[in-house]
Length: 242
Image (cartoon, rainbow, N blue to C red; front, top):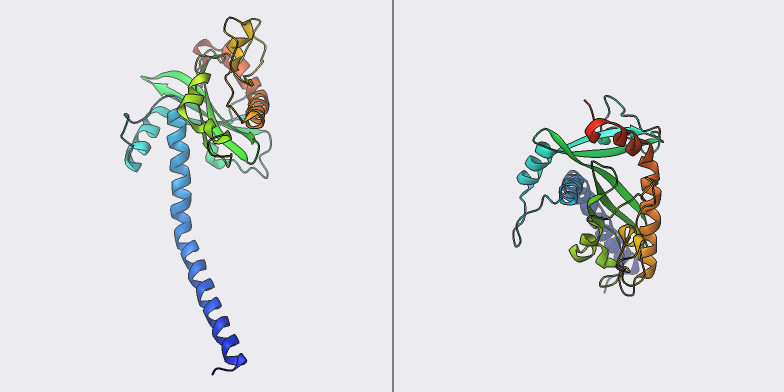
């Protein structure tokens, strides 16, 4: 029969060895985890402008990188709507670069097709992350993705499903006078024929608070980019130079 001291030493040794192994595994896997996160972001940026694999298929890591390099250009804008030369979204330090925002442009055949804005904010249980693509008129939604969240599966978690995000396509973030009104996730169904229907999408049954969170943070995020969007509507074709 082992003494209490032996039992304690054995337990301490096992704990230390396991801790070292776990720490080592975490350190070794960290670069891969960061790479996967960046790849997931690129995949969702592409998805926001409907660059997706065929049904039942999936993009390889190489294909995602290839398509992203071909079609997407990342820039940084300031709170006055100006392009910050020589800076990319990866260069932004959230702790020090306040007033600087990442933005992506979808370019096809040398012509701008959409401006893609990172959007995020509180839902019911979590911070929701996504990308909102606007047509070059800076008013019409071309697509949206919600790719990272902790909302309730089957309820608020439905925000990442195609049936929900498809409701945003073609909706307008501006009224007839050009004022920013954003998009509201309504409780229930959008009232067809109502002028407000252009700025509303159907809600998710049982997820009113998640929908309210999406409504609030979309408005907040669009306000950050409004100086840039206004400049784009005044520029011919809404093209980012450089």
